[in-house]
Image (cartoon, rainbow, N blue to C red):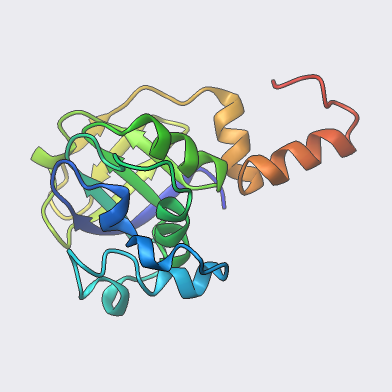
Length: 173
């Protein structure tokens, strides 16, 4: 997995809520790949047919607001999204994204430097996003090391399991 991502932009607006990310009628689905087939279907019907592994969502303010459903982040990840960059996040979506091993980076100004379909390169280690289409770069605050390790492990459950196997269950760092 690593901490570098490169992909094509799917640009979304402000206030995209969890019901738009994955409609409520699909919540009983337990297969994450089947769930992914319904991601954004009401607001971007072309998404599931066009998304490619490694693609990146760039969104406006308060991305992932609404209910606390982990399904929203999971549907995006299993559809192929590698990272979500947004002007700001609803706290619960931000937490759920990391819990399932998908990076979510709050990045004020990001929607001003990208367009739909641009190619981006994101480096968590350097705290930078480069728009490969235009050459514009923007920096962001680096994530705490424990959050990077959670991503590298594939989410909070594998991270915790690894820590427990290593005998470090009482240490988060």
